[in-house]
Image 1 (cartoon, protein in one colour):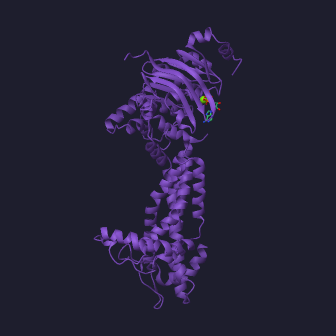
Image 2: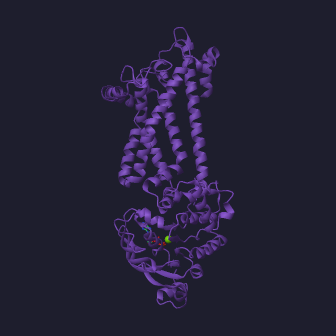
Image 3: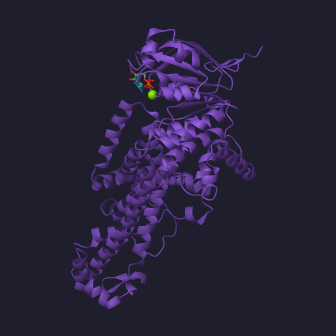
Length: 281
Length: 255
Ligand SMILES: Nc1ncnc2c1ncn2[C@@H]1O[C@H](COP(=O)(O)OP(=O)(O)O)[C@@H](O)[C@H]1O
Ligand SMILES: [Mg+2]
């Protein structure tokens, strides 16, 4: 697949070289293509999505594994798994018809009236855009990340919890021991979520506003991502250089995702090795 | 208030797992600075009994307890007693060594003092050193304090767990078959350590091994199907058991 993408990108790579990564003009008419704004848009929307979804997922995972009675937890778990199986177009539609109006009418005006003096929170509110995309991505990630983290917490040996409890640890101290035991697994879950966020095309293209610019003027402004531009422009592109540039974006996307998943794998493996030393039967 | 000569007095203790009644009317008084061994066939309730002594039993879902466990004149099951405080005063060592694998040797020992508010490095250093010395592990690990606990051998890990419990300066130490997962040499080290600990602490140890009970304990309790069948000075119980069941257990007719 790598090779095919590379072949497909050949025109673009040949013409722009590394300039493709640092260029910030995307003009199919003049045949100038630079993907930097897309790369930035992808990384920033995904990072903020993780920032939002991580603490929530962690809380849900802990509640499911530690606080809830088993049956209730399993029921909830089943429900959360169902959420994880919803196709992203549905999330996109939900984003357009429910999330965007809600954010536009209620949340964003509230934020702006209180923090509007900060440039990040100033500027016109369209409803869709950078922050909205991150929020929607976060909502999509929460089911996946919380189910993975629940599994990770369930795998924490009870001997470890009992050790902490026998030393007079409170519930919260026990949880912090569990988190520190599972920390690399948790990072693995985050990386997995990050991979999903980076690769998400459909839902993002429906709410981000698809505006090609290096940086948005505020959190409420529109932006663009690599996956979203592929979803939007691929079908209509006819110019070979344009097509090649899009394939080149696909190649970059693959590379970034590969890096993320390799890091995740290394972390998880390293984690298992440390812990394997002791708790094995 | 008159302080009793006993460190722990168990009065009419009953324990259940859901509807399963596993300890029945246990009464026993444990003297300060002695080693009390709890013996009995497997499944008779030994582990449950010592877990009732530091309020660990209630962690099992649907587990119940009734009766009293009086520790320094305080019933640990009184409503206003904080179980974390009890567990700090009554430490526990488990059957299977369970150090925190992701922490260094140092952090394992310092964990207890840290969560109970000791932050100063110099004080922690001192506690870690003393506890490891007391557990007979200091000489072996003093140059590797930052190594992960998982790097130690099984016997060392168990002594680390003992040091970790000692770091809280408990008054009582409960041990649940602490040598059953260890090789004989490590087991002997721990037996010697238990004798030494009795100079300063009250030790209650569950053991499956009668020779071990005879070697290290001052008092022996024999538990059979959830009941305390016999309890007395070790020598007496082994030489002149009062109960027929005890005799049969000691002579190996039941196990
Ligand atoms: N978590 C538990 N849930 C239900 N029953 C248990 C549990 N732990 C122990 N038991 C039962 O309680 C009885 C006493 O167990 P235990 O105290 O572990 O015995 P011992 O330590 O003497 O081998 C056994 O019949 C055992 O099956
Ligand atoms: Mg047992």
